[in-house]
Length: 355
Image 1 (cartoon, rainbow, N blue to C red):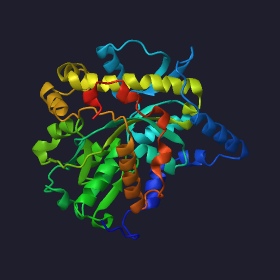
Image 2: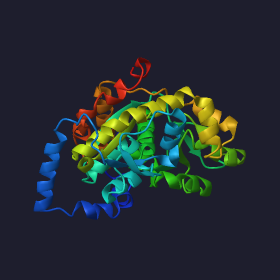
Image 3: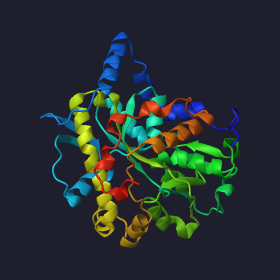
Image 4: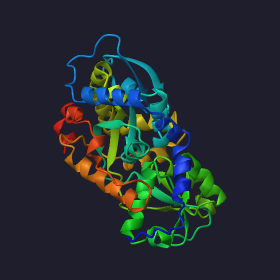
């Protein structure tokens, strides 16, 4: 896919909308900051403690309460540390801001937020990987649209979130269709703005999660809105944490202890779709049971690889794709992975969930 440096996309607009005040925080550094960075780097190379020290606590992202519900229904036993907050935070930019504010210690996102954090100058590391093989997103059109395929995106206004998985899915879909950035009009939004943008006609198309699309289509399909499915996948579902958290031996041990619970929770959800449909989608997300079943029918089988080689390769391809469009600077993504945690998730699940 060719890229023109005179694309209609204003890169500065993207940066200002995504970075906001956080960019100012990144600039507050000096000699003392360099010393702290050196200490953190040394701590990140230290072996993980075998046991979580007493009194250790973490603030963990649990978007829409999914993690607590998984643990409650799955009955995996108590965590060996205190959770001071289960934060209802899911979107990548929100997680980065929460990391910066010290209000979150570990988040669950796709592959693009760690790339975005690096571009902002914020140091955070990936500590667990779940590979997804089937698409988690589809493209929804505005009401009254005649768009039927990705090829029809030419000249259209597309909702684009640079710092979220939806953004990468869109870029990869465009590349696969042979469309350049100049062939479309990328409209910078965050995912929580997509519904309103579609409804109002601000955009022609927006990528929606499989779990979100039913509610939108239920309301607007009769008015001419429809879904466009592709085979483009967002490969990575990951856990990540600030380097400052991972540089604290006690908190790093707690993160390592949390990873098996996270992995087992996803396996339990996959193996118990009927109960999950009722307890989560119907009771907490207000979907009908048929809608819930349609969502879980598209669910990925969890896969926690013992080796992160495929994940690193995918993350590099994603970073390169963003750099190609001028959205970030090109860099080596290997710095985003804390390999001390590699294999922890895989060891906590049955063999069928490791390959």
